[in-house]
Amino acid sequence: MIRLTGLRGCVRSYLRVSGEILISLGVIVLGFMAYMYWGTAVRTGDAQHGFEAELGQQWRSGSDLAVLTNPGDLGLGRPFALMRIPRLGRSWEFAVVQGTGLPQLALGPGHVPGTALPGQLGNFAVAGHRVTAGNPFWSLPDLRAGDLVYVETIAGTYEYRIVAKPALVSADDTAMLAPVPGHPGQRARQRLITLITCDPPWTGTNRVIVTGALVATLPRGQGIEG
Amino acid sequence: MYGWIWQRLPGGTGARIAQMTILALGAALLLWFVVYPWASIYLPFDQSGLG
Image (cartoon, rainbow over all chains, first blue to last red; front, side, top):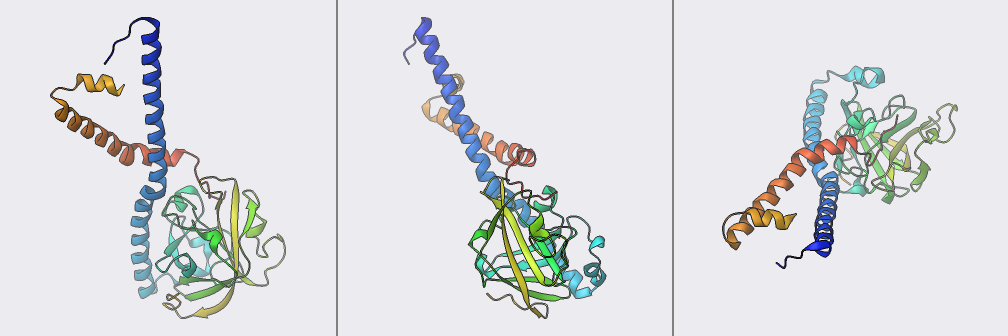
């Protein structure tokens, strides 16, 4: 290595070191994005495995039948339903937990507290991460009218059909969560489902919202095949 | 920075490459299992949360 002395050498080594630091920071940030996409999925996958086993056990024993008629009893971060959306993939299945704070969404898609429960009159609203936590709603904008969403609880499997293509709303627009989406204050007339995630990915700027209506109530365990 | 580390590693070129690889691997593991999980809680990416 040629050793330069004086001002030129100083400037050169300064540039080299700052260049190395900047490239390293770039690699660290890229690594962080990779962690958010793949790494957090491992953590969520562990939680989801536990939830599915837990729900299976609860449903077999029938101990928590009361929970589903009384949303207030659902603890934050507790699972109560399994969701399947064939359009998002044959193996796409997530346990839905109660609550939509970041600690709950880290476990899986979350039911918006205060909105209807699966199969009930009103709007069953579920929010999920676009990126991180297994990226459950990464492809939510791909849903189209006619696609099916299955929500299985202890009481049965609810089959919802998406009624329109995904809508883009601002992050603070909560009218879509109302019993009649877009019309807060009106009385519920239909049994609806609303799925919510972030758009563009990696940001919290907007929300992508998909709404569906209940078309059938099936015995538990059905509606798995896409 | 990396040149500075390189010069302070003992051994020949092969040994130094091996040591640099181990250092890089260690840094990557530290980031993946300690720094990133910590940062993912505090950095405002994908705030899908409602309220």
